[in-house]
Image (cartoon, rainbow, N blue to C red; front, side):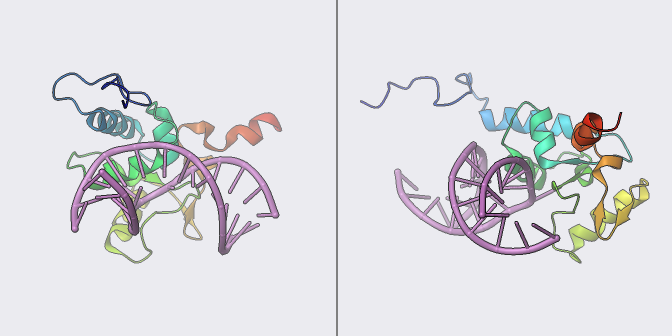
Length: 132
DNA sequence: GGGAAGGCCGCGC
DNA sequence: CGCGCGGCCTTCC
């Protein structure tokens, strides 16, 4: 008997009537993205972590893709500091333009996360350990 | 830097 | 209801 409709397999505590967990996650993600300051960028994975949803980088992308909410989606890029859209595509250009307009510097098609990354722990760990 | 492997999971077909 | 595809990531080679 497959576990009597128990509370979910992983996390998620039986969402009460009409509150799909996916929406709660989306909310956490969107509010997190909302916090990225102007002139700074974050990564899908970092946003997921900050939102309390570790390993859910993909979900961040999915949510940003289909949300209609006005959030600074352009401040989210992949772990390589690159825009996760085909170079030359509309989305790519728009994201890049918006970022540069905020003062984010692109070097060789990528952004220096140590410099514009948010939260700052994005790449400063090495330096933190060594330098300092 | 680059490619493969494994994770994670919502959504549409 | 199974399966493939994402605005991905990390680890290992």
